[in-house]
Length: 310
Image 1: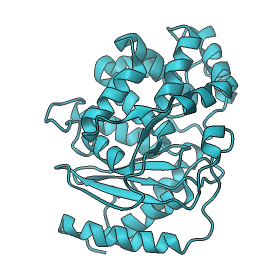
Image 2 (image 1 turned 90 degrees about the vertical axis):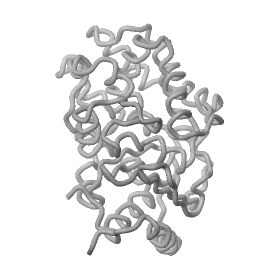
Image 3 (image 1 turned 45 degrees about the vertical axis):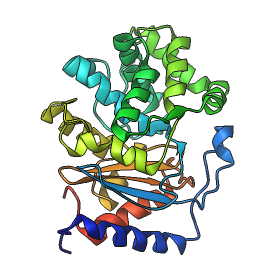
Image 4 (image 1 turned 90 degrees about the horizontal axis):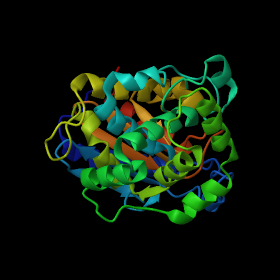
């Protein structure tokens, strides 16, 4: 199918996708291990596409804020990579894990070095290093998201953060285990507080599509300044493609064909380098922790438009 020649055709594509999703009965189930997310309606659906110039198209609940969760790992990775460059990769790998996102299995025989920055262990390392660089990892992330989205009202949902903290024993175990190998700099309780607050930022599909734009612009922020080199932007997109949807990354690449990152709040962001960025939200998850309707919508988007990295 021919690639679209005009951004004006995005709106009909989104309308078509929303109509198709509306006919899909099975939407999965919200994350029940985080009580603050368990009550979300799995039939909610929103989708936004942001052009490189900041023009945004949307459908459904595209302006409804939701819990970003692991989507924020993309932004903390970019913020730390901009500061540390390749030194970061001495402390976290770049390979798919093949295990659930909160698994402890690989850490021991890989000497406390997480397989990639998007599983929980890897994200803890990145947040730890960003906190050492900035003194306020969650605050730095929030400032960045506000600037890139143009929405100064973005905020951390402290109730969600508290809920995650109260049920965060496995993340605490990951943090302490890596600290025993010297791969965590800050006190683990401090790190966990930053991490839970980071994951509890609320934003809409429109906000996140805009905030992800620097990856489609090869490292250039919304104000025209450069955050990442072209090579670093390529690296982040590559790790998103291979690791962004946990142990379902191969299936996501097969179906969608774009760098993407999911969160258990039901959101998924995706990047068409040089063209646009997307965010979809629907709280019902599959067994891997990815939005059922979100992945289906992105699959339909690349199929209808022909926009893919392949």
